[in-house]
Image (cartoon, rainbow, N blue to C red):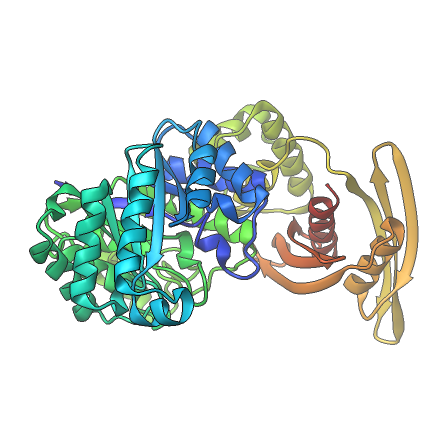
Length: 501
């Protein structure tokens, strides 16, 4: 079998999506999930861009031992130095160097001629090789680069030591047949191409990211750069789960090709990235959307009951999609809960397991039926627990109605001190937020607020994700409860704790 290398850039390109910023702990959590998922390469970040990004790449390099850990770098010595230093602890480091090669980028962004671009690319790869042997080079905006010049650049960087050459469709401009021809031409025309892996990085501006990536695979590419849920700059990147399942499902088309992805972990990883970034997955999203394996049409239901393959080309359980499994109850013990956690594929520390079990018991007292997705939400929330947060909710009371101005009283705990205040607002949630602001002494501004039901029924667990701005600092927060006001308050405090840490 010919393996397709899965290069996941969720933590670099995905995190560059407006509003998707992750803190260091969240990045490590995603990296660990990607390792369990079986990705081959994790692009952990852009070390020169900020101290936070440098530290995150360094922490991931120290902690994650399975996949190759990659850091992005412009074709500048200071960038390469930063990437090399951040990646120093990695068992399998890779430096990913890029430089724009299209006429429009060279003229307006770089203001450099072809000869200088070629020289800078070769010098950057040669310099990076001093730090590690695994060097990747990307001619940015390759799909709009003159073909002869692109071939020359690819040949030159391979000669300089690049072992992966990535052909990016940086602005999502290419069309599948056209992009496939670009890959095939490079494979046929570049004399030393057999010394490197051809990679592709396709953006989704015209909705063709996955189609272009698959066309490239058909024409010789053997590494695909993609993200979980397709997140990324502008309209996003090629979706990892769609590429993987296309190759797996259409074995007649992709004969002899495979990936190393652990399919049953796809849905869980999708949920994690969605929760941490605050980007909800659309119900109609392929593979991981809420409706991907649900059937409402009577004709479809009848067909599925008789033979699943009539309307299902993928089984939901194959990608870890389980929405109907009724599990456990308020009389269940810790051992049974622990076994269920393992069966769902989560890896919790003893402390995290204890917190999760307490949350489960609290939820079991409120809900009659507890579903798999309720458990997933509890576990995902508690996976972040390392120490008690700075601000904790003790209680809240809300007085609201049709002809009553909403008013809320909130009690918070900071270390061993209990603080309380009240406020009115445009609604009960707004009143709670303003009361919290008064207690802490801040003025928070909501940039985004979303509420969704985790499972079905009147007692469904509600999950709130929001983005909060305080004095120029922005953080995402999330919280869950059968009470949507409590869920909102928890999410608000989650964001504040990230800002105030």
